Image 1 (cartoon, rainbow, N blue to C red):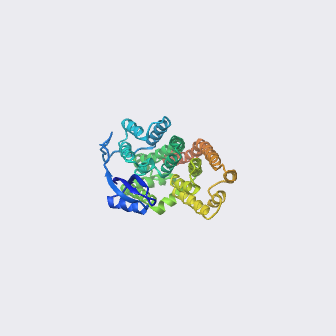
Image 2 (spheres, rainbow, N blue to C red):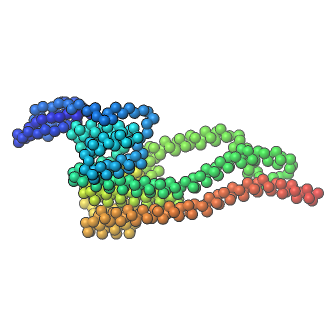
Image 3 (cartoon, rainbow, N blue to C red):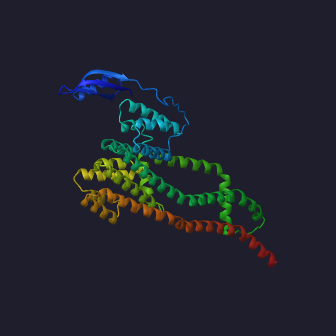
Amino acid sequence: MPNYRYTGRNASGALEKGNLVGPNEEAVVEQLLGRNIQPLQVEEVKAPGGLGAEVKLGFGDPWPNDDDVILFTRQMYALSKSGVSLVRSFQGLVESTHNKRLTAAMTQMIEDLQAGRDLSAAMAEHPKIFGQLYLRIVRMGEETGRMDESFQQMFKYMEIEKETRKQIKSALRYPSFVIMAIIGAMLVVNLKVIPAFEKVFDQFKSDLPIFTKILLGTSKFTQDYAIYIFVGLALTGFGIVKFINSKNGRMWFDRYKLTMPLVGTIINRATLSRYSRAFAMGSRSGLPVLQILQAVSEAVDNVYVAGKIMEMRDGIERGEGMTQAAFASGMFTPLVLQMMSVGEETGQMDEMMQEVAEFYEREVEYDVKNLTQAIEPILLLVVGAMVLVLALGIFMPMWNLGSAAMHK
């Protein structure tokens, strides 16, 4: 929306000047009247054609990933700490940023800043790049005059978030590859190996062992209905994705993730670690508790946990204490609740929540290291059972044929 520069008089008759954003001049006048300001002059401020003003985006240009935003935040921290103005900082970053969408966003923010808008308001125009927690922390930095500390907190928070997700993905990579290898091996066996032995088994003219019958049956079923199986799997996968992307499906899936065998506890603790660190960061920045909980609920990336956090927020609005509301949510262990209680009593909630975050992070790190050891026996059992059935199904008829030939 266009930006307008206005001049007017307030209720006491004093002259006021400033900038407002609105769809048109009439809407800006209505905003001023609503603030008890009598407008004297309202004129549109044309966006300057500054550095990087012509950033053309293509359909396939990717959105900034976590690394891009982390690098941007770290650079803004360094520039803010050095005393470089926001406009000059963005102008320098536009030249060195390779992601076109982030470059376009910074170009727009330069224009907004030059038009008199706050940085948090300029960032709010790009919700796919900067989340609600990011915006609230930047806003607090503007109000306190400690913008460098705000960027430093966000940088550290995002770095830890990235490392936690990396650990979980690393732990799940090995079992995922093994499971895919097992599925691929089963397809090869059913489509190529078993049919080759089927002609030999037909010559035995005797009753085949049960394992052989199972292999022949599954192989024949796979060959006869291969197309239907693949189509069915594709439709099932599409339906699952569609369900998960729905409101009720997302709620169910996010809740199920916290109770999944083996990895559920890791995801649960990682989510609570994210909540605790974000809460500590907001508390350290001086945000009110209700605003912190609102922002954190949008930062945990789990609809079910976000709902629990909002229930805590509602409880605090009704007059409950932080610890009491946390206990009612059922998300935290007694040890963590005790740490919250101490923080609430001493007025050092930010330090206690920082301790809670570090506690959960140590738990996640320990569980991730042991995850592979916990999964390996299960995978070995599955592979062993598959090899056993395959060996017995193929070799038992041959053994029987050999025994019969020897007796003859």
